[in-house]
Length: 185
Image (cartoon, rainbow, N blue to C red; front, side, top):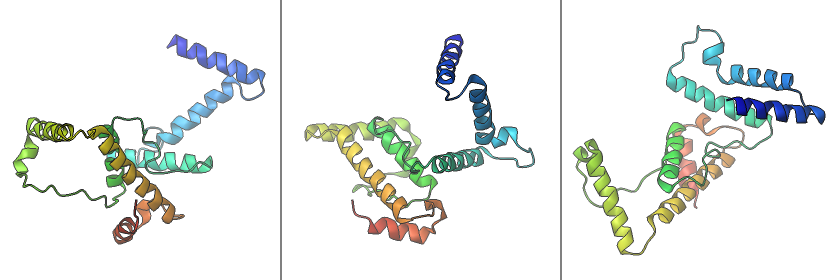
């Protein structure tokens, strides 16, 4: 912690020498940011927020900050392309579900017993079998999943541009579905 504080003081001193900001301005900015980003902690206790409300509010605050700083905001812009493909796909899926974007998944051609989802071992076996199938065909499953997920992410970005001044969450489910099905990637 001492090393981190030393770096903060060092960089603040450099910034002050260059008439950018000083340590006290930095502290005030950090204080403002903490209070602004965590109203559930620092603001009125009248509004009891669930953990889901806190996460939703956090997303809205980040969006507002990026818009104020003239940065393009996207639901999926903070998902690093460098994540391993399963984590990447999971992150894109979670963000799209949160905004109720109608990302469809292909139905598997074989029947899967609902009980299979009760066991991580069985799911691991299915995933391993799929990877084995890819390997037998000399296909890299990591690249296949990454490329498909990039298409979904691109489709979400296009959808956001088409929705113009509205955020996707403001659109009706019917509007979202029409828009989603009209975008070809």
